[in-house]
Length: 131
Image (cartoon, rainbow, N blue to C red):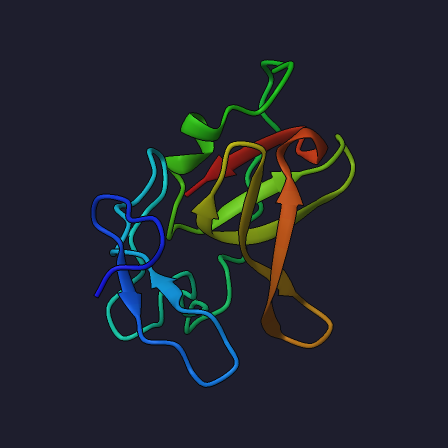
């Protein structure tokens, strides 16, 4: 069944009484730099690590970057990563998604001894190091 306008790959579902027909979009491929979801987890939701991060905090990198590139931090996906938001402030992070301007994943909360899901603007990251 086709609706008023049809686009390639789009199907129309019959309408409910009082509502117009609604389109169904085909499965979209992953965008460049986007990783597929892990098995057993709904799309876009990855599981937190099952263990705490390493005890040893890596040393602050000596080289200075002007901006964190999404392609660079994508190499740390699903790996323990130490993130510095400044030279003095840092935290353990387990990235599960990298977008063009942000990264999302699990931040270690040492007070609660658990991983908590967060998103971070890449501009807020000063340095990072994955282990």
